[in-house]
Image 1: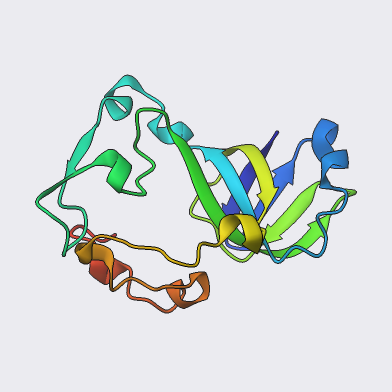
Image 2: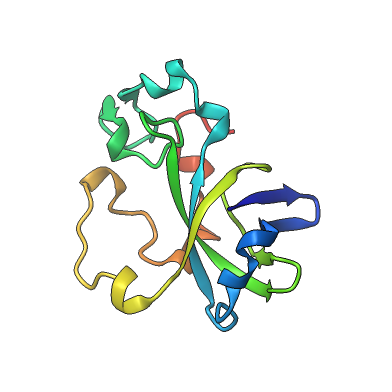
Length: 152
């Protein structure tokens, strides 16, 4: 239904012309959930990966791929919450503050972030990730590269 465009000018979700009417009413939502396809990892080798060696410094020595947010998965569907900067229904563009999808990533669906459906009051996480930020906004200033064993 669309693609992620990422570059020096920022991040934009481009919606194909035949789906642009579906943007009606999106203006006013501060965040959206984006379901996207990790197309660079859509190959038999990446789809066969079920475990990974200690991706996070405080993690166990090995984790199942479902215990990670890695885009390398048996079915490379990814989910990202992104802050909306603007919605341009006419041209089929949603400006994003950030997304972790690569440039050209196919977008499968967009859903508005709605606190009554997407926010959970009582959440628990494993000890190795319990120090991660509790809120999306705090993630922007968190030392994420310092969390990974092989930071980019």
